Length: 266
Image (cartoon, rainbow, N blue to C red):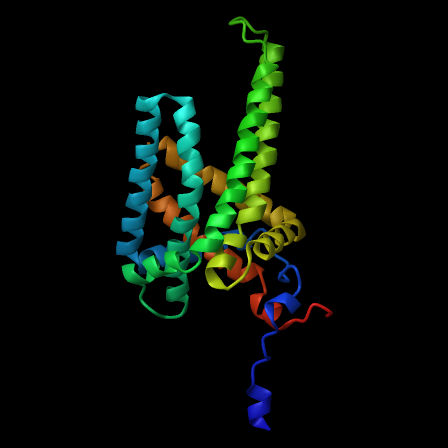
């Protein structure tokens, strides 16, 4: 009798599960807890954190240097497009570190490299989706520029309208990328899930927790600005820190265990 009570529910086949993992209701104050947990993980794996952070710092400067010396904006767009494929792999490394710490295991470099290799197929599919969104974003930005009178003596009203429209377009596409990726990447890293289910689960969780995720998005933007203001030196701390914090946000938000045992008809 005791054995049956303690037995975990059987997992249902992937094709019989709901299209999206259920999620918890969040509070904006949860974002501070994620930051604290991420900072604690950074300290617990200080060597790995500094190593991956330093790698991100050097990679960022390499992108800027190549764009500056190889042709400006066109090269920058191409390099950023390439970074779309590298970014998820770096994120998987951060998630693996936090996951091991949560399990009470000291993470190692080998563990993080294995974490990058396992979900690489799904991460590439996701990267292609992001790349398409990025290219549409770049095209929309160029269309906004076409309608701005580039005469060298534009009126203040025209400049304000241009900035407002450009900001709105950028915010729209940034929101799409944020909603699609904030929980889907750790979901892909943690479970054997297809990209569509991961993205739908992420978007659903964001829409159900709009205010909390708005606060989280503003925090991410603010810390990213700090990274650029410090000549990207701040990314040595900021990128791993945000990666760890995102892992804790994912664990608090998506109820993955329930999704794996919940039939589609439920």
